[in-house]
Image (cartoon, rainbow, N blue to C red; front, top):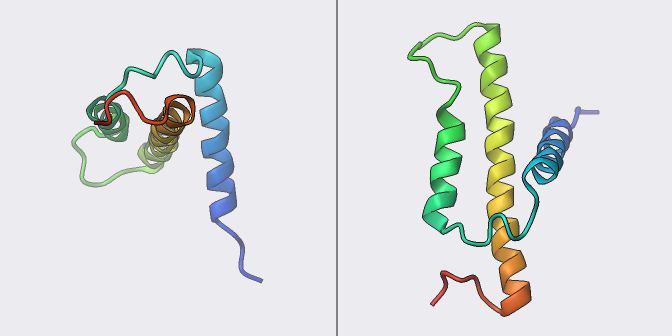
Length: 96
């Protein structure tokens, strides 16, 4: 039977998202973020591991993985924020 590689990654993203909520809160802390702000946060995390190298060693690859998990969790937070706003008021504050 083929190993399911997706499950551990999703578990890591879920754990990172829990950490983010514990650290920063949920709801009111992100309800004023526009889609452009979310994309800026995501881009920032997605590129933090980069050091200008074209070849990476194991430490760099580990840092890349860690930042991609954080990036994925921030993307999840963006979707959660949109869904939460829509469930509370029918639309996000930035929707026309």
